[in-house]
Image (cartoon, rainbow, N blue to C red; front, side, top):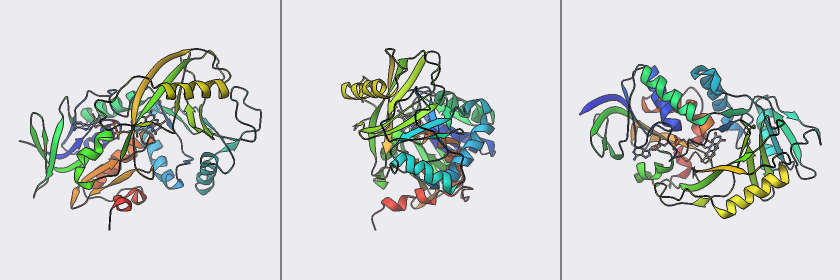
Length: 363
Ligand SMILES: Cc1cc2nc3c(=O)[nH]c(=O)nc-3n(C[C@H](O)[C@H](O)[C@H](O)COP(=O)(O)OP(=O)(O)OC[C@H]3O[C@@H](n4cnc5c(N)ncnc54)[C@H](O)[C@@H]3O)c2cc1C
């Protein structure tokens, strides 16, 4: 059986970054995945992901985000597109209030946008609009591929097309069993995305997997040069700068719960399509073209929509990230770094204690 310093189980968004950090530290490491690099069966595909610093989800994430920005730049400066992002919502609502809180707590540059300054957007009367110039987007597949390519260049082994069926802690480390082989290691990182509950079965993680939809509309209006996030009474919607005559839009709220991500339908959903079309019609007056493309993807949600990042109870050489709740990709490099720290017995350089497992463990 081949032996490694560290094995990464799942080399999607987070696992590819963990493999990169392990390899860069000179660890003899192996990444295992059932699907090919940058595949479209999990949660890290669909062309783009927003990255934001003034974090409305919770200001505790901001130090991790600052580290993530630095690590994306270090990986390849061309990956991080600082297009700026507009936030629209009612004063006191989750997004506007959350952005303001994070910005004031961490001295971030967020501007108030005067009413009627953005004719390409149509926000309900009385909505506040904020602008964060440092926010932007990441080309999701290229990010995964870059992490994997640079991991392999630094000495990592990457085996895909191999499903992991089991892993076990042993007296001296871990043994990971795939459909065709077994591998041993001193440490293990588990980054299984929508399959996390199954890979971490004994923890009984309270995770819910939701099928989400991405839509691309034809758009010839060059005023859409920024990302945007709308906090509407009936849901949260977001989108990306127009590129090659296409504008990508999706709904952050809602989503159909699926029990088996492997066999979930990848077809458009009528209700979701109607909601997206209504959002585009009512709030993006410059987007008049037809829908060009559609993809599905998975959110893996924890009960409080915050990540679960920790060492495996009873196995301090096993670390995992799960329940990224539809906002984890921008954190991939810092999560990769944290997971390698945790699995190899080091203290993470950035505080992530607020994401610990204990908040969901029964006394
Ligand atoms: C529609 C959509 C929009 C999003 N928008 C944003 C955004 O704008 N900004 C943002 O920051 N985040 C966003 N997210 C969230 C973000 O994309 C995810 O949190 C992140 O990509 C999850 O990465 P992951 O590594 O956990 O999962 P994945 O990338 O899916 O990786 C998990 C990997 O584990 C492998 N695996 C699982 N089980 C096994 C097994 N038994 N054997 C072998 N391999 C296995 C899978 O094949 C997969 O490759 C969005 C997500 C979706 C779906």
